[in-house]
Length: 322
Length: 305
Image (cartoon, rainbow over all chains, first blue to last red; front, side):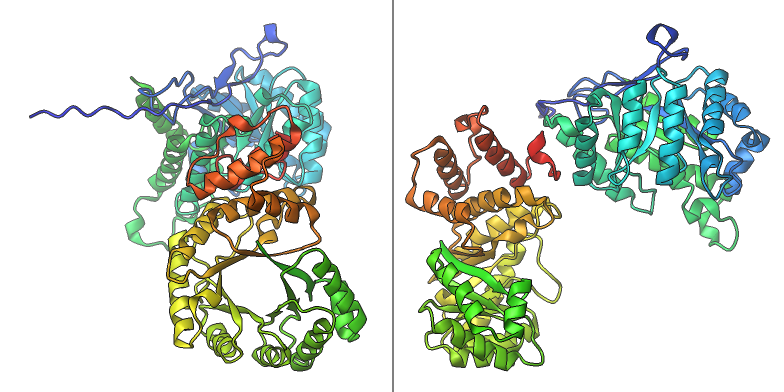
């Protein structure tokens, strides 16, 4: 006898907030298109339960200084373009991502220590070369971040960049710059829901509207804390759906950076044969990490390898097909 | 609620100085203030005090006994000091504390038995504190059985589930509260239960700590908590305990506290419809309930949003 099983449908009170990155000329920027993320009223890809108005999106990560410390597999994939950030941005845009994520690594004291004005011009050049909305990361040293990102925010006023990272120990200056120049702040917490919510509150408390904050709960790569970051993403999504306004920001995950930090992605020699083909291994590492983050609730995944970009786009296509 | 006054604790610089100087008068003043505030027991924490524990515990027990008849809770991991303190007590005392860790169990249980003392037993093993109420209950049963073998009856035991900070282990708060409920049902006669209350707000901003402590206390009392180690000079805390004990629903705030107590006692969800959302005090209580129930993610600034 056939048994009818009813699909259980959860009723949620809240949804993820919508955030739009980039501004067109009409909106005060120069982007040829904008990207809206968030808006989900259900867990990831549960189309039968609630609305998923925007697909998760892909950012390709580039940087303004040739990344000689990157895995040989990554360097081989990009070739000489990594020597020129504008050329790299154009090549990345040709792969059809939704966003470009630009790391201002050259401002790091260990990587050239370039000044704020020079670095801000780099951002302008990249904006001139590609029409996609931009994510901009500082060098990751608090003092330089503040110096450089303020200048970047000023010279790109109105572009609605996403700017990071704002952390509990250092957020005020960057948030103020976002506030004054119409940008979006990226709030980073160390795989910790309590600290994530706290930094969100602190940023909002400065007056930055909730639709101009993205959460980066920190990504753990496959084998390096992936299950922890999965739990945190899931908890944040559940909390959003339950109506907690201070956890409803869309999430951004720096998948490429973390996955390509793993030994499995970096090292080609002196490793067990069972680890398989080196050229594919890093791509697999990045793809598995990204897929998992998407299933847990990532709204933006920041990737590094062109092949991973293709695989993840296909994955998102399939998950969004109804 | 049986109030165990915690103010004579080695961690306080004033207490430390008074102990070092053997300042009897200073210790007696601290004791008297806690007596006047309505304490039922006074805790005397001298730390491990490896060198002079025997002498210090004997001295401090004598000092306090000169000014009050309240029973004393002797708080040290030093077994020799514990024994000296118990010897000095003219009334049955409380041993604070044993746990299911082998050394602490075999050190403290025979002493409690020998001196006919009550005993605080922490549900903790060499492996740490079990995360769940059931895990703690299993350890509690071991502690009850071990105590029985030493001739300590279960109603002389104060089982302590060990409170962890909400800021560090938010899902754990409910488990602690449930552990209290389960402990009371383990054996006849029912063991007593006790918590070190203020640990729940450890790590939280100072301005929120009192509120978190108070709301947590009401919830623990609803689950059957008998006793808490607290600062008896925390007037609001003692007041709230009295409100729920007397079921004093004479103000809107009090009605919320009694209703919160009942909701935990009846294992029901707290009904927010009685909260006046325009009254900041009531809203703060409700937000704290949601935080402690793990319904909303804790953040240090949770009262702001």
